[in-house]
Length: 205
Image (cartoon, rainbow, N blue to C red; front, side, top):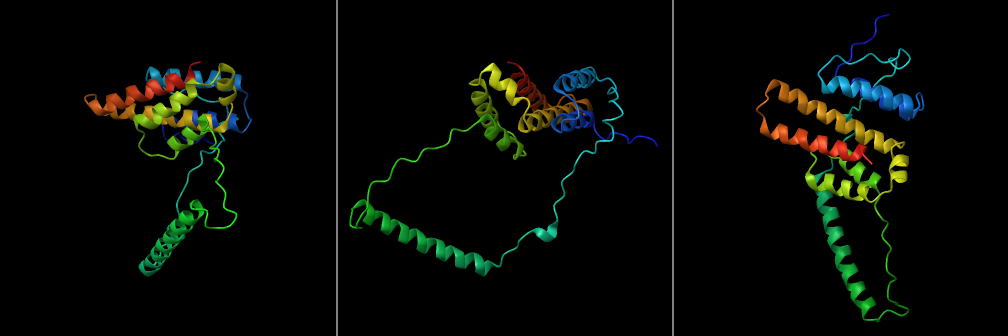
């Protein structure tokens, strides 16, 4: 039976990411095969074929069922707006009484400890965003730069890292295809340069 034709230049890279994340190949094999694929993309050569046992991997797609979208009645929204305002006023009043120590047993609240954000938190923010901006990318790179080489090495075996790496590669390929059709797109040239910088800092120690 003939193999399915890959629909996009990064299909092999996505298959490798899925295979590595699911434990079907080890990191050494993943790195070697990925390097071959990236080398072909860099010089606009045909993508090298993957091992036969990986070609059976299906790239998942996500579809949104319109029937699952919850459309609320305007009156319901107005009702909850009134409820929210009433609760806000009540909360302000109770807070004032508490601070004035008019409520028996009121004590100063203890400081709330905020959890330190990790690189995976910033990565997830990027993965959930369609249009990346320099603020979010630089926020990730700042926290990533504070990690030791050992911590970075451990992170590269995680699913969130592989998902982020695959998304960057996909966007790089998309920008390259646009520039092949119109090399004078200055905005796309800047976007490709930004993505290449991001990917370089992500994969270097």
